[in-house]
Amino acid sequence: MLTKRLQTILNVLPNVQSVVDVGTDHCLLPIAIKKKYPNMEVCASDVAKGPLASAQKMLQEYHMQDIQLYLSNGVQDLPMQCEAVIIAGMGANTMIEILEKGFDYCKACKYLVLQANKDVDLLREWLFTHGFSIVAEEIVFDYKYYQILVVEYKKQEWNSFDVMFGPILRNQHSDIFQEYWSQELDKYQKIVKQLPSDYPKLKEANSKLQMMQDIVKKGK
Ligand SMILES: C[S@@+](CC[C@H](N)C(=O)[O-])C[C@H]1O[C@@H](n2cnc3c(N)ncnc32)[C@H](O)[C@@H]1O
Image (tube, rainbow, N blue to C red):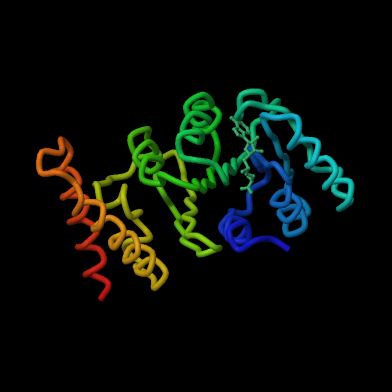
């Protein structure tokens, strides 16, 4: 059974002809994709041999040997172009590095499905400034909060609220979104209170705090 985080990624994945799960590790997601879409060409890759070996074991266990496994740094060493790329369960900086090094590959995809474990705002800013748009967004609680983005290579208008809160998530303003940002606001208020008055980034911190207050107030 998939975790809520992986299940949500599966739910938002568009029905494409081919997909690669980059940084697959346990390979649970590709197995679930193949079960849901038997005709989809499903591949999985990892930069490290250890995770690939456990992926291979899982494929044998689940009799899913038609899922191709590749040793690849990001998308760089993949022998074929897939219509969709999934990158999940990493920090935004690692994901941005993968997207930068595989920019041409990612631009040629119909969709990217991205789930950063932290710094989702950095990821969104990178996507917007590099010509991508967010076409679907989800937030789930699975012991912690996770945000999942479905992205296309197509320009979109954006602002600092879109970067921080997500253009779709902030418009939908679900209960879970409100809950997440109320908690983040509490934490951030405590941090800002303790900053010295000559802290060089105080103005920046206060404007971030104001944005969080605005969004939380809007949901009440
Ligand atoms: C925490 S696991 C996430 C596994 C799975 N994607 C998930 O969301 O549950 C991160 C995996 O990403 C792999 N990884 C890290 N950097 C990578 C890169 N540049 N290219 C491919 N895989 C990478 C790691 O080896 C590790 O197996």
